[in-house]
Image 1: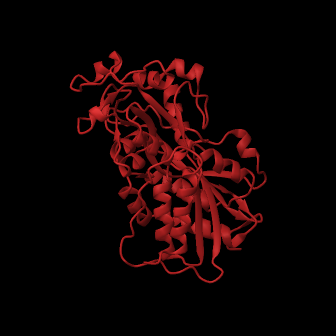
Image 2: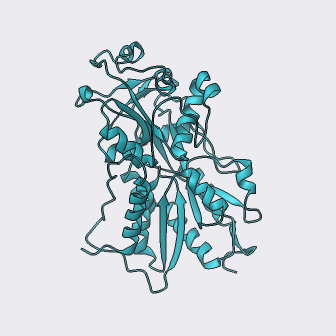
Image 3: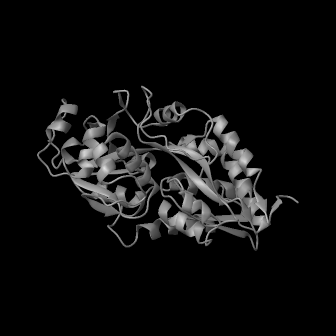
Length: 372
């Protein structure tokens, strides 16, 4: 079967992101809903380039594939290089849009004036602690709490049968085996969400390591992208790392349950992620960006986050601007939400979705409203 150019470009992006580091297990690619193929891009189809977060890549690749059925005059190319790389490229004006799970700093916002950067939440997702321990295969899920998770990544817990882990898992026979910590080696929004959570629950982590897309890890091996971390964990007995939920599921990796701020043990899912969003209320701040880690709800997943597209509020290419707006409107519609649900991402609440659509209406081209 011949694949459309869009799919080939997206597959190359995954291969590219996996190069230069520890060999990784490929992440399963989205399956076409039918034997039909998108309409081939029209001659001279507009190429719209984006780069950034790997956290939403399974969904973005599916969205761009499906959107080719809707509009054959534009072709979206997204490179899964990590949030840090995406932010860097949009500040340098080498891409038309970027993906990030990390929040922009004041300096970032000022970097491209007067084009004005805008973060637009697209969906939310869960970050999970994924592990690979031969003795635990086929057993009930591991349970961790905030202190144990922080101490593992601080290098203070070194064995799988450490008393802190044993106390949380009375029904598991934990081996006397070294913990192999795996973290991101690139600038990462997934790292931002994960370290934001650890900083919220562990004063020691906040003081010694802190929050960021890249941090000075006290211990562990680095993997490039969610793909790289998932691959390293899957190939290393005794390993524990952190990835977006879709990567753990697609790679059939076990992931831990967590004791949340309310003291309840919860599993990462679309519902518990949605609960986390709800705990922080409806409307977003003026930036349309916020942290939602460590929510107070009884059934809320503690390591959740929005993932964003970053766009220029004022562009020079009016046709390209219009195409980006139309794609985002489609992605946030019921049609786009269907694919988000299938891949365990959580569509925006209606109040947040309306805020994003209103902000899209404010985008301009060469200082003028779109369509004028």
